Image (tube, rainbow, N blue to C red; front, side, top):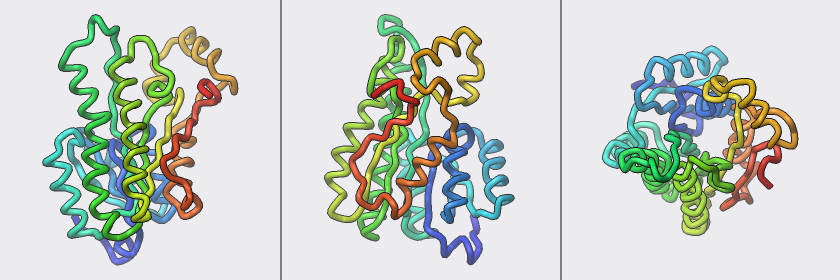
Length: 252
């Protein structure tokens, strides 16, 4: 990988699971905010390349970095490469995640392990690796993308809820650990967001969801990206250990 002189002078941000949906919008927003954005992907390199192309077409800079957040050895290797070749990481957005829905009595061990490994352990691995750089630089913002389901629960999503709720508790603890080094850790909990996943719902399903949202409409990936933009900026310098719900009022 190479980077030009302009990008090398920009603060560095990494977004996991940035090849589509919310992650892609976050990466593009941070690039507009002046960050050199590392677009992480696990398998969808072609889609990640499309995100990078949009970033560059808009005048931003970035690069691709493929690794599996659930593999601690890969995470450590890639973050060490970044520290050596790109300088300290200013912003980490842990967005990578999956959901495998199903009732508890039908929950398979392998599905539970996969959900916890990506949604919770992956964020912990990346935060641990980023913290080393941020503590040395005495500056940094870690932003976790959890879910409203981690706050309120939902039938058929026990494993997903456990992982996303665990991310909240982890982040509050780490915010206390890293605060003295000027490293902030916050959580965003999206509600129902208009993505490919919600696009596959039937009209009846969409209507049922909308009835649970006081504002009466679905959020967009950009709604989440705007909150990330705030938490990544000096405007949020006195904000840490917080859970920010972006859900249209479905959970208060």
